[in-house]
Every structure is written in C-alpha cells, then in structure tokens.
Amino acid sequence: MSEVSPEESAKKGVSRRGLLIGGAAGAAGLAAFAFLNSRGGGGGTPADCVTTDLSATEKTFAFSNWPEYIDEDDGDYLSTLTQFQQQTGIQVTYTADVNDNVEFFSKVRNQLGACQPTGRDMFALTDWMAARMIQANWIQKLDKANVPNLDKNLISALQGVGWDPNRDYSAPWQSGFTGIAYNKSLVGEVRTMDELLTRSDLKGKVTMLTEMRDTMGLIMLSDGADPANFTDDDWSKALEKLSKARSDGQIRAFTGNEYITDLAAGNIAACVAWSGDVAAAEDENLVFLPPDDGMMIWSDNMLVPVQGTHKANAEKWIDFYYDPKNAALLAAYVWYVCPVAGAQQEMEAIDPTLVDNPLIFPTPEYLAQTHSFMALTEAAASSYEKDFADATG
Image (cartoon, rainbow, N blue to C red; front, side, top):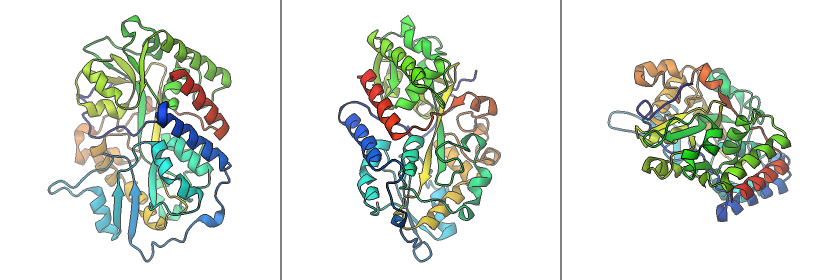
C-alpha cells in the first residue's frame, strides 16, 4: 500500500472540503437541505428561468472558486488565467469566495430559487452539493460542442458519476482523496479505521471530519460495506461504531481542515484527513496513506447556474483547462488530483519531480483503492445528516 509524506508532496493550497455540523453552521447546513427539499428536489426551477447568453457581445466571465486553487503570475511566468485572457480576449473576474459548500450555498440560494442572477457565470462545488443543485434544476446543461476537451480528456475515474453520468452539467476542476494521516514522531503507522477508532495509544488523540460523507464512508468501508451502494443497516452499523468510539473517549473532536494544525503540533496523533492538507503542511513527520479498506475520492466541479449570462465564455474556460498542457500547469501549482488525461505527459517538461506523484497523477492501482459516496435523495440526505449530527454532538 502506497503512502505519501510531505517530503514527497510539499504542496501549496488549502482544503477544498468542509461541512460544519454543530452550532450555527450545522443549523445552516440542515436548513439548506430543507430549503432544497422544499424546492421539490428536481423541479425547483422552470425551464424559462435560463437567461439569455450574452457571450457573443460581452467578452467577460465571472467565476467563484475555492482559495489557493489556481496558479498566479510570478515574474516571467504567466498564469493559466492570464494566458486564457490573452488567447480568448475574455476578461475574467476570478473570486476565491467558496470557503465551504453550505456557506456558499447560503449566499446564492435565494437568487437561484427566485430565478435571479447571482453575479456569477460559474462556480465550483463539491460532488454532493453539485448533485443537489443539478437535481434542483439550478444548473445549465453544457453545450458539448463547446467543450470537446472535456469528453476527450476527462480521466476515466471521474466519468459516469451517478448524479451526472454523461457530465452534461459539470466538469471537475480538481479532485482529492480522504484517508488517514498520522504524526510519525508520536505514533507508529496507522493503517485502518478500526485502529483509529480503537487503538489504545491513540485514545483521546484522534479527530474525525465533520464532512459526513468522508467520515462515514471510511467507516462503512472498514465494515466491508460499499459507500457507493449501502443499506440502512450498513449505515446504522457504521454510526454505532462511530458513536461508541466517541463515548469511549477515543475521538478528541470532529473538525474541518483545522485538524492539520493539531496534528503538526502533536495535540492529536492521527486523524481522518484530506490528501491536500497533509501535503500543504510541509511537515516531514506527517504522513497521509490510504486505509487498508480503501479511501474516499471527491471532486470540486465547475457549474454554470441558470442565470449565468456568459455560458459560452464559461465553456471556453472549461475547454481551456481540459487541454492537457494547461491542466499540467495548474496541477503543478495546486497539487491536487488532476482530472485531465494527458497532463501527466505534459508535466515532464514542467516539473519532472511531479510526474509520479500519486496525489496528482494516481496510478490505476492507487485509484482502485478509492470509493465515492452514493447520491442521496433529499429525504435520505436530511435523515443521514441528522443522524451524523446527533452522533458527533
């Protein structure tokens, strides 16, 4: 089983993930699910809500993305954004204002629900939230003729997702893994979720993620269940295991990406972690590895809202970043899983040290260890989120 330390993967960037369950943020999250459910889950927006595309006369484009998720101009180096503007003549308003899926949803839900512009032509959201917005009919269908590179170059691991099987509405920006991280200066190797939840030398020194799909997905894998196709019994068994570990004092806290600070400081010894966070820490004592039972994979996806007024310009952006050379330039900066086939070969000329990094270009064997979380109905999502919120306190 492969493992990657920051000595091999010293990356720039921050976590893409995070759904805070508990307190005000948890209330907002559950309220968001209820709001989507009230929209009907699949018929919330009439067809005539889609606005007129002004791309032919207005060479502009507004994109909301996560922080530290794109390369930047540096001396003689022209960023991919600058190159896109020069090649297309389209001026980009790029805003890093997606800090959390639910938080961002709260910014735009009223406008989307009322068929009003959000001021954005595209935004990037994680799989489960992307699925919800597509189900609510708040996302425009892409014109395949405008994004030939997407169908041609999307890596096979990200094709055929249940919530958008033909990628008619979404294009992955970057992807990442959820697995186990530990501080090797404090403890020996931690290879399984069962170890994380029961090992005596880890008691009180473990954190789990507040993102339900990551934490519960890994626990279900440890029980031999498939998080992409699980039953209520599978869910209950995993939830009971989590609740017991919490009541036994094994788990110190449930966190967002702040766990990485505690791991580096020695306040915790091991945790459920996102691959990019561990690489970003640039700490030789921190190790990320796939649990023996498998790890979760996720993507942040580019989406064009129904009131995006520059859809064709947004599609040019997608097609540009699905060119392998441009994708490799981006990957060399952000150090997340590159979704574009052919970028690994292009990386040879950009930074040969990254060509074989599995956190950027995972091998088929590495990807074989990954699992996704199944698409949920709004009712099921609300029920599972409530269960998880109760179990995590």
